Length: 323
Image (tube, rainbow, N blue to C red):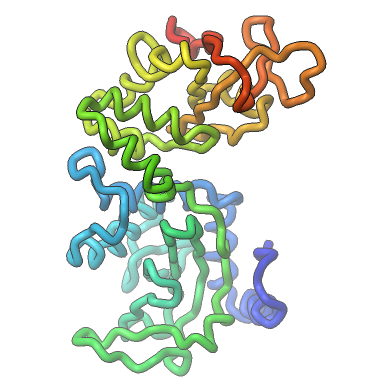
């Protein structure tokens, strides 16, 4: 299945490429079968960027704060993490062997900036792009032909794909959603308030107050808490979940019961390793907003003028007393 957002010309070329290049078609189909929605691929890219930022140790959340050497090695780490996630075999001449064919992997933070080595000419390349500032990513396949490349101007004689030939790329996913780097996209006042407290627990509490209705990944939690037991700092029994409950704020995790509550309230549903916070109020008669029934009582998202009341206890995960 081809992405829906590519141009008609690119779509036609892609159809022809699939028909004319059995190896390209086989690799395309294999990757899509491993990850039909692209969620696994997106998660690898999110985790790789977070791995480079290393927020638990450094407190960083912005790609621009990486050292030049870290940015240089980003492509290698993307390559390794994709192979680990999808268990691609090692290639003979290129990075991977997928569906029995050699495939090279190239990543760029800048769209179109993939650096193609001369030895990749004639081979299939998996071209990957992700941008934390727009929260978008793409991945596509291209059989490298020398006539489609700009001349190399660096010491390694690496080449780039000419802009007018990017329509030759067979997109697996194009401009897909990259899980948000919440800290990067908070406004300055909220971000300053989050990092103002000295204690990691207080910083996490402020994060869940100020980033309501947004998916917050565990790497964001690590960066804010900067503590080894960062996940404990979210939960009840002394964590943010119990600290913010008197303020009417729920913190839903990736447990199925929590996901159903988020869905019923019309919130983003937390995926694996994610949390979503929101202030709620009991849904009185005539309240038409989306509602979730918790412990037999209907709750709705609180409006700015609603009085602050304690939030209900969330259903605990199986085998846990936490709520």
